[in-house]
Image (cartoon, rainbow, N blue to C red; front, side):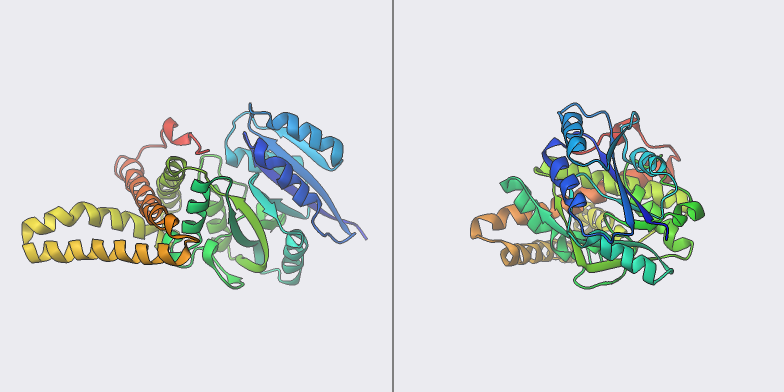
Length: 341
């Protein structure tokens, strides 16, 4: 019996604090003897000591390989890693800040082998942090209020969904729908998973497996990250001629509503008061949730402030994307390629 070939791809750029834990966790995963695993760290020209760390890891793990990504961007890293692995049976994508549970790979393989209708599997996300700001961001992102109803980050039971993080795919999926879109600096995974469902495949969220994810450690970086998510989401929508999920429309609608509040006062004082009351309700709801999730009272204000950072940054990025991609019919700007770190 031929062994099953599993390719693990880790896109990476300047991730020295995380890459050792990421790689070590992958090789610590429980796998059936019939599975032959090769791990490819695709490095985007790191200059923080990441490359030296990877080379040290290669002396410890013979199945670890390094691929150079001169383009430096994530979708190129995905594709380069998949190409480097050759015609495998399954492909697992793992972010450099993602630390897999021991049963992650084996359970994904089991699910994909049991049900050919499932083309993609991923697990639940446990947000981790390295500083106090990261902890606050983690607490905010662990809520449905922060991330939106139905978002895979806050799902509490296994089931079908529209996207997952650190996904595993049968290789034949790439033969059916192609590889990752290298035009997309952000949202390339959302785009790919939308193509999966459009082609008839199903995406499974498995609550029994998990990964730790090290969140951004500052609000400016969080703002830039979610602003880019919103901006690039519109580019994905234009590509497919469709809104890929309805919840993506909530943040831009919220931002437009905030802009409109003074206008309601100009139309009629009562309408203005109603609009202001809605803003107050949002603030109070966020404050209540902050009280509920905070470990101590001193964290409440910081968590409360983080909610509008998530919502307004995404909403403004989305509106900017509408103007650039749908109104002006332009391509993404070079400045939008800068990643948040």
